[in-house]
Image 1 (cartoon, one colour):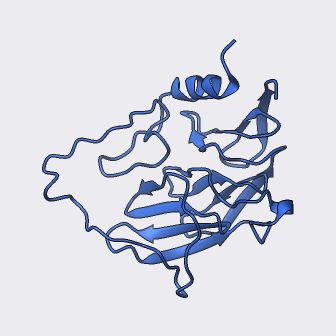
Image 2 (cartoon, rainbow, N blue to C red):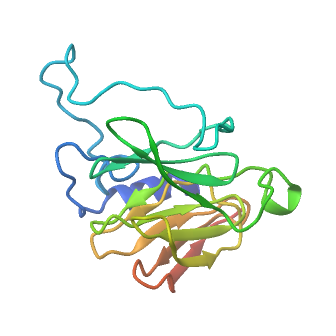
Length: 196
């Protein structure tokens, strides 16, 4: 029998769906079918400015950035062990907004010991979905306002994937489950669990 993580990757990789614009990378693997490449015609002259980001809007150091970022419509989205999801201007690196997970401080045992390590995924309307070690799956609007959250049964380290029907697929650690959530409402479509 295949290990559950391989099954998750095979399952998530079998979908086709959200077609990204040539400059966007809206979720881990770029598309649900993991079209994880992008042609660059002239690498000596990238189509965007190069920048480094290490402090948030008030000058506080950003904690570890573990997850792969998503890029959509000129915005870079990335989670941090601090328990924050950041939206940055792709061209300048300037902070657009910050979302804070419900359970803080993120490093506490009650919050799972880490923050947001789940790579985010971006819907066509610019809303963003991601998981957290605090066991919640969050969806925020394009301007960072909470739209819904779903309480899963374990910490979330896996990337969020938006399937072709708009549902959100995301796995948990500890309980070893794959969740399918309605992308519009956050309600549970189904849950499948393997051996821990």
